[in-house]
Image 1 (tube, rainbow, N blue to C red):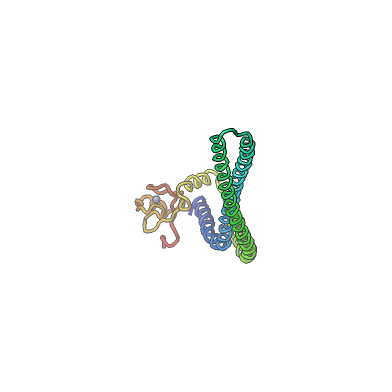
Image 2 (image 1 turned 90 degrees about the vertical axis):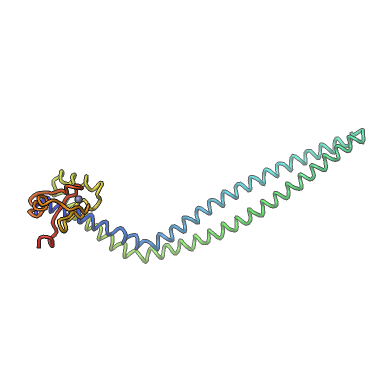
Length: 238
Ligand SMILES: [Zn+2]
């Protein structure tokens, strides 16, 4: 096999090996990711509760302000009542007074209602905080449990990357660029074997001339249909 083609096949194999490690890594980290996602969701909930409480406190203070104003009004009514001259005036003031008192009462009811909800939300927050604490200690344990597997995987990755880098250093830069260009759209099938005279990238049958050239392996052959680099796997020639 042509030296450059051999390098391309090897480079592609490193990329495929790295790709295979992705789901393995995800699987190892899955118990950890599950716990971390739970914490994330609870943290969002916690933030929402904090916002809710802030809004409720604001509503409560608006009612308190209203009560202050209404009390001021009652004082004014009392002052006017002392100077009242007609029954009609007295009646009007008394109605005003009654209304203000009713408003104070309902504002107080609102305040009590908001306070109750705030208390409930605060309790809910405490529960969530406890839950997060528990999850966080579980995370520490899980992390320790999977550490060996992660270390082994990292070592594997490191070796592949090292081999890949060494190979790239030896490669002609134009050929490496050519590979990266195909890889952009073809991914790791950028270099595909021929099986039963068909490109295993696009699964189209290739013509006899290209097939014969590929078997010779003297130069880099690309699929006439899709443009992937083609090579003959050992079994094909046997
Ligand atoms: Zn093809």
